[in-house]
Length: 478
Image (cartoon, rainbow, N blue to C red; front, side, top):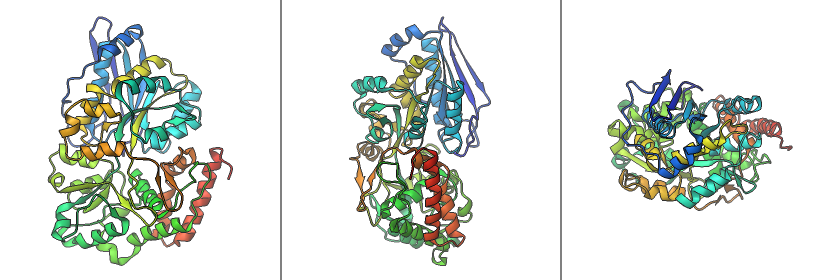
């Protein structure tokens, strides 16, 4: 998600006589050619049409976290267009990058100024806690209760990231699994096993074993440069080694620990030890969020960590790497014998001061299931998945569309929390401090300082101090 905020605005108009117009201003491209037409005939259920009757002529502003696949963004637009046409409403949709560091601050400023949109969807793990802590969100427990009656339970992670004091402040939309990917053909050539998960040390050693720079084969495709992928990688290693940014309440910084230092030492050694230089692709030190996708699709990497965007891209673009990809759930460390694999959901929030909260809630209810979601899911296979249990059973595509779907659905049902030997339980309580520290790229800055020669223990101590400052800015005295 390397795009900057507000790249495009799409306005979907519905006329009371059933005639509609679609205005698209400044559409943002992704890739070298236009996205294909969406594959699904989107329909608005009669129950929602009945609820929308009193809202005809109304309008709502929406903010969408831009999806990696432009075809999926186009399918999302189609769903909104059909909704507007069928209900005689207007939906204005702006795109935003989840990796724009000022996204939460901008949303909060708009709420305080009374200029905010009505609703948005975004990562519940990364952003909902911060927005709730700022008092920017409306209680949507009524919507979630209604949806549970229709669709069963949402992904287990949502109860951790969307619920505060027993009330829901975000509506799970679609599930995004965590994933790692390796070149199974390279592994098989070296006689290395294909497993559901590995230890981080195994992955490092295997990456070196399959590397051959002369053949443009680089076994390690994980950067520590400023990016969302690097944040996830660094945090995962620290957690599986037994460290964490904060305690389980999300209020007390506990970053500076022997376990964190051990994890940072392990990561730093990969990028500084000459032994591992053959497995590092050129330019890895300056990668952004799109770089590992591009290099994976160029078929020069043996391992990467990513949302399923890279898997979806290889499938939809018929890249040969798709057939040679072994997706797996992640890695273990000294403090944990199972991967931290429970994913996150893009979830809808309704902002305080929304001009049309009833229409905002109706848009959210429409988008989470049926053909509205199916159209987006088919354009981003395995990246966009149902968050709700019964939606998985709503169409054969979710069971037969890809071999990875069964494992993805199981991830939505992960038994939580996952406990480390050091006493941490993941997912931890939603922490605005942790979310803000991650968004500020303190973890990647720390690793860059280690690569430049700072002792891991000193880098961890310095980062701990910076994290404390952010927690105190969020109102958590240390």
